[in-house]
Image 1 (cartoon, rainbow, N blue to C red):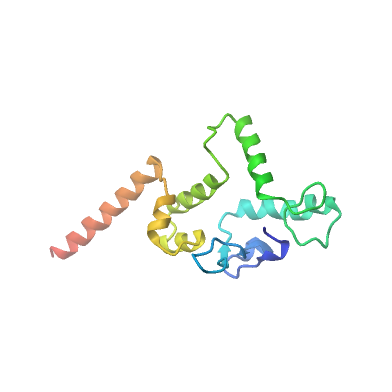
Image 2: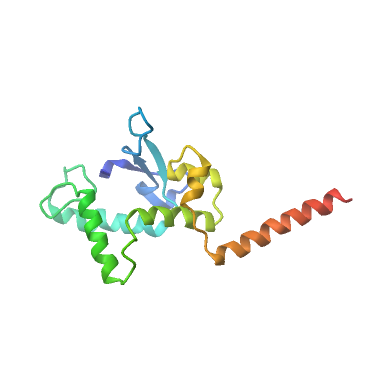
Amino acid sequence: MLDVADFAPNPAAPELGSLGVCHVRFGKAMRGSPPRRRAIATVMPWAAEALAQYIGDVRPGYGLRSHPALWLTGRGERISPRSVDERFATWRSAAGLPAELSVHCLRHSYVSHLIEDGADPLFVQQQAGHSWASTTATYTTVGQDARNPMLLSALARAFEADGKAGR
């Protein structure tokens, strides 16, 4: 449900141009509330590059410059979530990946990668649009390669604090 106009520059990341922030208009609603709107910072430069290439080179080929939707079908309509799921399933199968993987797994991967890269937990929670940190925690599956440095860092801080307290 993204529109081309949902993107804006991020003053903190001018190198991303007009794709520094994505304004989500149709986030998951809380019970009895309308969908939550929020701004998501672009944190992966390669994603901004790929999107810029799509907007600049591919999307104009549809001949629908005035259509607001970011993702269009060959018939010039907004792409449906079902279509995205079907396409993902085709690519997943072609790659030989397990059938239980879904598009939603990309969201889990994104959150896990932010944590593995050392992003602030509050930033990760805000990026995911979660009201509670415990919800964000359920999305994370940090790999062993990231766990070891995190553990060593935590232990170093603990021993450093213990050493200062003993003085």
